Length: 297
Ligand code: SF4
Ligand code: SF4
Image (cartoon, rainbow, N blue to C red; front, top):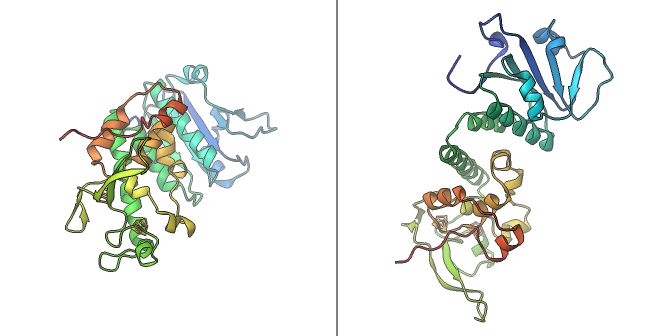
């Protein structure tokens, strides 16, 4: 077995070589089908060691069902050879709950855990695998950076594939439709908020300092998930709460940090994500605490 806290395994190596350990299966299922052929093939004879974590209650005396994973429950399963099975399709909130539960199990248990993902052609399968990889990264800063880079990569791929901004020369689609203030370079213009007594909303509008020779020289997640009003009117919106990795590992305030720090360097955003803030959410937003303070020249 690898050094990872939780290891994704295939059908052939579901269990460790330690045959003395009591086996236990934690089966996360949107819907569990007792008769499902795959269940029989894999878990033949192990139904008694299985606990199903599901919202649905099953009227079958042979299987144990729990609606959620609690600390008390985790204490009971310590020192067992644990196999987590993920049998999900596209129920986003259940998948989110599953990842949160697996993270809790990994945090509260010392032993290594195996994880088998049933292939249901879920649109979240890749995200689930990435979430498991993130759980294996114990260092918080490293985990944040791993997630940050993955989301940036996904956004780059999506924008490239769909060609949303459709730059021709330095002029983007929204500029061509006369829906932007600037004629060139899309929305790569930084600004400062004007004080509340000022009649302007923004001031110091200028080309972003990270734009060099028409290219961005940092990796800014806020810019990557952003779409302008022109694109939004066409239904092109990136909701960070619909991105499993961000939703499972970052809180509401961190989502604001991710969404609203344009024109900042990657390192500064990652630093800001480490910040703990105990303000009430209302004050947090009102005082724009999510924003990275500008460095004094
Ligand atoms: S997000 Fe809108 S304004 Fe910005 S580059 Fe794309 S099309 Fe242009
Ligand atoms: S940080 Fe944002 S605004 Fe600045 S160049 Fe990069 S993408 Fe453009």
